[in-house]
Image 1 (cartoon, rainbow, N blue to C red):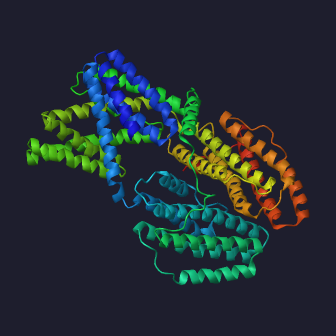
Image 2: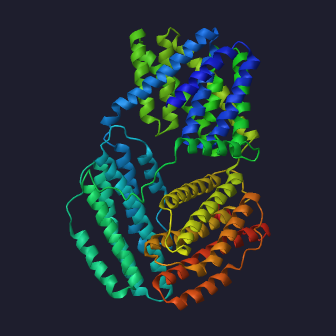
Image 3: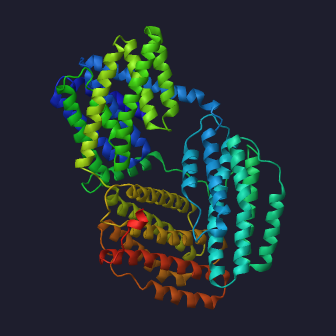
Length: 632
C-alpha cells in the first residue's frame, strides 16, 4: 500500500507537469503503460501498483499547476494512501484472522473433497492450489497477533501440507496394489481414505466458524475399524502410510481444537528470502521480461500505446472530462482476451446502469449538497461490497459515486452522467480495438506455462533424488521452496489452459488435446515426486545406483521444457525405460522396502516423461488428432 501511494504521488507530479503539452502527456502515459505491463511479471502486488499509477496519471492530467503546487498535490496523494494504510492497521486486530481461517478451511475442504471422491478417482494427488493459497495468506504479516495464535495456524499449514503428501502416496499405493492384482487391499486403502473425508470437512466448518470442532464421534471409530481391515489385507508399506495419515489427521484435529495449537516443525516452516535477495530476484525477472517475446513486454507495449492514444484523444476531443478516456482504457485492457472483453462489456453495461440508477435517485429525491455527499459515500460503500462479486455491479456503483461526488462539488448530475458515458464508450472501445488488432492469445502463452511447470517439477524431482543419492541429506528449506514453486507453476498452467479453451480462435501452436495430455502426464511426474518426498524420512543409506537414471530424467525433462518453449519436437531423449529397468533389476537385488518404492515411482516418472515427449513429437509430426470435441 505504501509503494502504491508513493508511485501514485510520483505519477501525480508527472501528470500535472506534462498536462499542458499533449505530446508530453502522451509520451508520459505511454512510458507509464509500458512500465506497468513489464512490472506485472512480478505478480499481483506489482500489477496493483502499476495500475494505480496509471489511474493517478489519468486523473491528474486535467490539472495545470506549478511544480510547487504539483509537489503539494503529490504529498496529499501520498498522505491519502498513508491514511488508508493506517486505517487498515487500526482495524487489523478486529479482523479475527478471517483470512487465515477461510484459507485453512478451503485447504481442508479440498482435502475432504479429494478423500470423499478417492474410491472412484484416477491416480492423482490432491490439488495444490488451496495449499498454495493458504501459504500466501499465512505469509502476510499479522502485527497484532500473539505468537501462540500464529503457531496454531502454522501448525495447521504444516499438517495440511503433510496430509496432502500422504494422500498422494496412498493414491500411488492403491494404483500399485490394483496393478498387482490385490484388489482387496486396494479397496481397503480407498475405504480408509474415503472415511477420512467427513473429518476433514468438519474441521473446515469449525475453522470457518472460529470454533473448536464437535466432539469425537463414530467417524473416528469407523476410521479405526477400516485401519484394522487394511492392516490385515495390505502390505506393510501401505499400512505405514495409512498410520501416518491418521497421525497427521489427529494432529490437525488437535490444532483445530485449540487456538494455541502446537508449534510448527521448524524444519518444515518456510522462511522467506531476505529483502536484498527478493530485490535481486525481482530485478532479474524484470530484465528477463524486457524482451519482445515476453507476454508481459507485449502487453506493456499494447498498454502503453493504447493509453498514449487515449491521453491524446482526451486532450483533443471536446469533452469536459476527457481524462475518463485513458482511465477507462487502463481499467479495461488486460493481458488476456477473456478478461479484456468481459471487463469492457461489463464496464459499458455498468456505466449505463449506473446512469439510470443515478437518474432515478435524482428524479425521486431531488438531492441537495448534503444529500449528494451522503449518496456518494453510500455508492462508494456499495462498490466495495460488490467489487469481487461482479464487475458490472461495481461499475454501476462507482458511476453513482462519481456522479454524486461531482454534484457535491457543483457539477449538475446530468452533465456528469453524459460526460462519463461518452468517455466510457470511447475509452472502452479503444481498449477493445487495441486487443482486436493486437491480441496476445492465450494459445501462444500456454506452451510457456507448461514449460515452466515441467522446469519446476524437474527442479523439485532433482532435490528429492539428490536426497536419496546422498543417503538422506537434504535441505528442507530448498525442498519446500521448490515444492511451492511447483504448486504455483501448476496453478498457472491449468489456468492458462482454461483461458485458452474460452478463446474464439483455434489453437495452432499447441492443440487443446496436446495441452491437456501434457498436464495429465506431468501429474504422473508430480505424484511420483510427492510419494518419494514422503519417503525421505526412511532413508538411512545412499542409493548410488539411482545416479544414472537421475541424470537421464533431468536431461529429458529439460528437453521437454525446451521443446515447449521453442514450439518444436524434443530431441531424442535418453533411453529412460532401459535405464529404469536396469535400476529396477539392481535395486531388487538389495531387497529392501525403500528401493521397491523407488522402482515403482521411477516407473511412473519415466512413463510421464516419455508421454510428454511423445505428445510433442506426434503434434509436430502432423499426426495430432482434432481437438474440437475436447474443447467442447
